[in-house]
Length: 409
Ligand SMILES: Cc1cc2nc3c(=O)[nH]c(=O)nc-3n(C[C@H](O)[C@H](O)[C@H](O)COP(=O)(O)OP(=O)(O)OC[C@H]3O[C@@H](n4cnc5c(N)ncnc54)[C@H](O)[C@@H]3O)c2cc1C
Image (cartoon, rainbow, N blue to C red; front, side, top):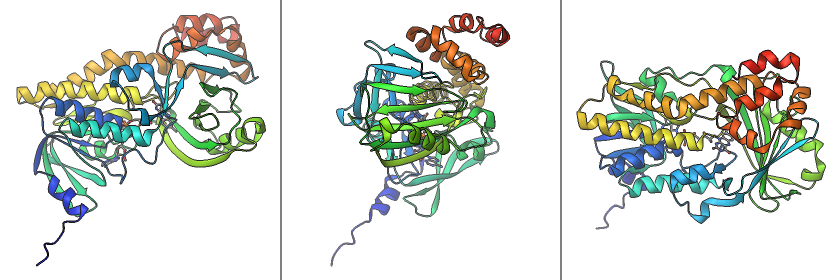
């Protein structure tokens, strides 16, 4: 008699044990970072991803700095599309500042490959990774989180125990809310992102990124062209709360720049929210932690979150290690994660958030004035939470901006 062949779904179900040291919800860069680091320490880890394909569809401009690569180690060639050596930053009047990254800069990656590679690294370190598996709820013993409910491979909901549950489920983080940790961000701290991957573009230089500022171009945010090839790029925009959608502003810019986009085609369209501030003081509960976009760990000026999610994942993993060794995963012990994150990342990002608050008050004329004095070094420093005094000095040239400038000092 023929033996019945197990379906892929059965395999997904059978891969799963009844309990783990750590369960991570969401296989983005944050979730894979926690899972890999904790698995390397020898703990049993389950990393669940609700999407059928990890990394797809992307919701990202795919810009990755060299600094992030230093943290991640060598990235496989198939995750990289372009090496980026500089940026051209446009003021509303077309004035531009050239930034030369020198040996730094970064890459435009392919998130569909990159996120899969990160998840594969986690699995090679010993984590069990399962796509098409959604964390639907958490299990509680009183106030303590002791596991999750999940639909593995889209099958019936089941319960799985864990010493620590980590929510790395992105900006909408439903898992945190189910756990009782309020991660709701204020609307003022959320940008709307919209992006096309376009081909047959006429790019002036495909080794530079192009950033466009201005209240008519991208209110409160900026518009970007991130080249992925000689004539291919992610063309996207992040905007704050306005009467119009991010897509409206992106389409308008494309329409108004036929020299670049006249013959171009759209090969992919994505949208997504970007937390640009509203960092959480507390990111843990008994048996529970939150990392990455779910914890608003994003740079408030450029909206980059890949580095932040990776670093936060590593910090969370180091604290999980200590807590499990102590046999105490209480909020008190896990709160060391919030403390370390604030010391190492939060304090810098808070300064960048202040800068964002100042920039959103600038008129187009102010932007134009700033662009005349801004150097590449200062622009780079500002995105990292430094050089605030340099910008304050530029703003102070205009008496009406003195009060605003003081906000930076
Ligand atoms: C338009 C746009 C452009 C951007 N461009 C850049 C850029 O160029 N460079 C940069 O550094 N950053 C960029 N970002 C930000 C970057 O994409 C995020 O900061 C980064 O992906 C955060 O990683 P994460 O792991 O925290 O969350 P995510 O990458 O969002 O991963 C969360 C994962 O959790 C899964 N999930 C959700 N709920 C569940 C559940 N209940 N159970 C299981 N799985 C679940 C999701 O499917 C997802 O795969 C951009 C964002 C947007 C929206």
